[in-house]
Structure formats: C-alpha cells, structure tokens
Length: 282
Image 1 (spheres, helix red, strand yellow):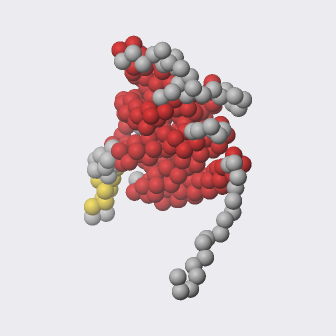
Image 2 (tube, one colour):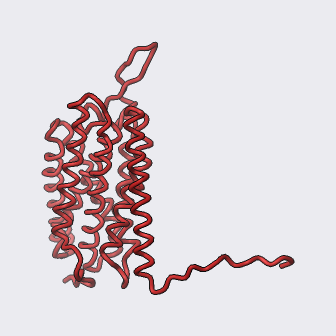
Image 3 (cartoon, one colour):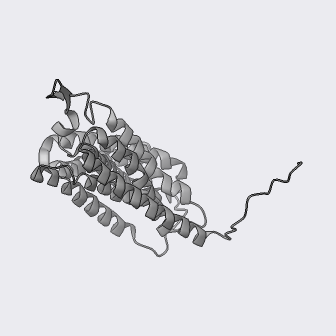
C-alpha cells in the first residue's frame, strides 16, 4: 500500500497543466511545419518552445507522481520519460506531417505498458503510476521531437537522418551530418532528461510552491534550448539558428529572474550579506 505524503493545496490542478502543456507543445511543433510550406527555416524556434512547454508539464507530472513517497525515483522518472519517448518519436517520424500525433499515440501505449508492469508486476501499487508514466512517455516524445525540429528544421524522418556536405561546390547528401547520424539526438536526450527532473528536485521540501517549481521548469527548458540552438547552427540556416538562440536567451533570462524573485519570496529570511572582508596582515 502506498501513502501520499504531500498534497497540492490551491494552485493550478494537474489536469489543467497537462492539457495546457500538451496543446502548447503540439501546436508549437506543428508550427515548425511552416518551414516546409514557406521554403525557409525561420520557424524552427517553435520546436524549442514546444519542448519547453512539454518540460514544464513534465516537471509537474514528476511532482504528481513522486508526491506518493518515491522522491528517490525523480531521476529515474526523467530517464523513463525519454527512454520510452525516444522510441515513439523515432517511429513516428516516418509518418510525415502526422508524426506528432502518431508519437503521442505510440508513447501513450508504451507508457501504459510500463505503468501496468510497475504496478502489477513489480507491485509498486502507486495509484497514479499508469497515468503518470503515460504522461511521461508522451512528454519525452514531444520534447525530443520539439528539439529535433528546432535543430534540423523539421520533424520528418528524412530531415533527421540526412544532411548535406559541399564537395567541389556540389551539395551531396550525408548521413553523418544529421541529427540522428551525428549523434545529436543523444545530446538532446540528456538536455531534456536533466531539465525535466531538476525542478522538483530543487524545489521539494516543506516550503514547496507550485509557481516557483513551474517557473524553474520553464527556466530549465530555456536553458536546454540555448545549447540546442547553438548545435542547430550546423544543420539549419544561420538566421534560423540565431532566432532560436535569441529567443532561448531571452526566455531563460526572464524565467531565471522570476525564479530568483519567487525564491526570495518563499525563503524564511533573505539576507543580502556582503563578502567577508580580508584584513591586511591576516
């Protein structure tokens, strides 16, 4: 039998955060398809925003799950999300424009299987385990697809597996210069996995507040978006990569300052102490 050791009082219900995160992430990922419709790559940054929305949702899902007394499972929940999500995401990319929807469906199935196994085979008996692992798998798939679309300019299989290299002025296809062939997907796996598990780990305790944790989730998402934007310089137009980088830096700075302000609000006492003076001769 499991005992819920922490209850969310007030704030935004988890269901609303889940619906909002899912819709925003899905819409933003689909907005990257404007690249294919317009023939430019300037809309790639929407993929990063979609990943940030999924990470914020994921940080609250981890809180929802780990409030049942499995706080040590926070890191494993993040890795479970992306380990199952990457399977759904890679499989879905073969379905073209329907890829984000297919990724959600496949991820939900994988998450349900994992949740059933955890509760009924491993006998964890956590009331929200199945729902949470379904959410985590979907979150992992959407985060990976969002960052992939931002870095490569598209969420379709060909764009993720084939780049181009210039030889004697000729543009030749290259598997190595691509998100999957170049191993970049492993990097965004870790960028997303760390970002999704850190907010609850950093904010848990008797003075936990929902808004502070969610803003930290957004800050972690934008922080992960910064190196992803830099990586995208290798695969998309310089202008598209710079737009992603500028948006990521602005988003990170805003959410970071908001998090510091909320941390000061929630602290028992905030002391703006000065450095210890160093006296001459000592």
